[in-house]
Image (cartoon, rainbow, N blue to C red; front, side, top):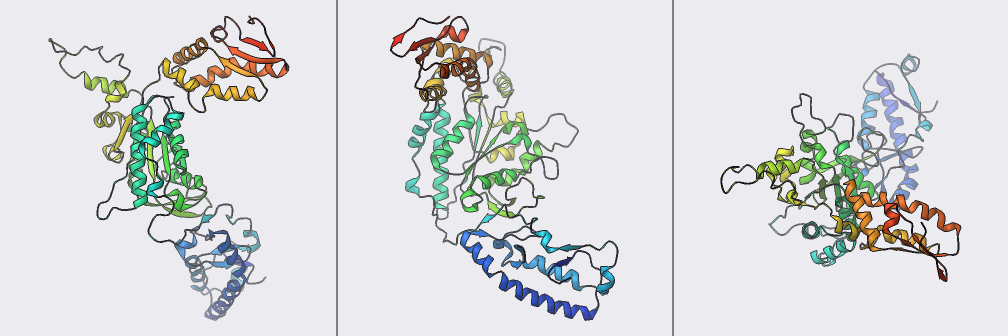
Length: 492
């Protein structure tokens, strides 16, 4: 058995004579490892990734120069020193120790498959303080951001305007880093709107426009540290993965936390609120800006993956939620005025108010269950309107990647033209209104009646055009089929 092939995992004492001999052997091993590691060090320098300690999973930028061991294993100086200290602080004879029950030895060749090489940390480039990736002149103005959002999102004018201004100011702050002695605060956002109103779609379009990393996560899986579920720092870990583990790029990205209303304080609960108020309190440091250690490529720090430090000071946080029953809280506040006399408010005055959500205040959100410290770190609060029939019809046909255009493109690949008459669009919108799930209902309805058409069209090469009618949507008729070069009557 050679000294290079085995690591002692448990050792109590060692004799003084063996101390000096082992120290000498250790120093000799260090020299050998140092010379053998030159080629791997050169390779790491070339690919631009940091080495990670096999024991503590910290990167080289945190621990200092790594020590290379056989089988592509790297150990930081701290862990190596602790290993030597553990081996030299005893006085038990090694020959006796090797024969003792319970003392295990590990062959270093077995460690080759245990090294977490799949997850790497990209090196930070040495650079001066000025900002390189974003230039103030390259940041689109608010009206240009809104114009781009208009191409993809129908309606929601106030939400698009508020988001455009907030994003523009945020990235101006990031690009300048600091404005002399005036420090600009972060412009984190809170979006409130019913399901299917376009909250997630707005954020996706925004990130694509700005070409920055985007992480979309769900607040329902977040729990307080130590409990089953995702740690709060996992939202930053997802952003790091979206940035290809490039810390510098991730620190300029956007994190969208959906279903934020699901972490509201639980009412009348005698149990510990590990997924409600505790999560809100844990997210305070992330929203405001702090350095957090996050695992690379995993949601838990206990995984066998390296850790890296990410500064959230320049990360834009956008929170969104449907906030069910919030309208009842708003209505209750608005009806607190006297209900008697000539100036009394009618009790049913706000029952059919579609813009009731736009009257929300911070006090309403506090009553809903959001803590004041959390709301204070989301200074920009705006609402999205529920979709009406006219908006649903526009969503079907106007956006750049509208769902009708997607089906027209699919059939165009079969050299068939697909058309929808106005009555069909209105019928689809009416069916979607009944489902009360916003724009998401449109896809389900269209998938249902397009199934037979997408199945039958490839069978007949003579079909040149298909027109979807209101009767076909309502189930009282069929589509109009037009053959190549001639027309045929409507099919029943």
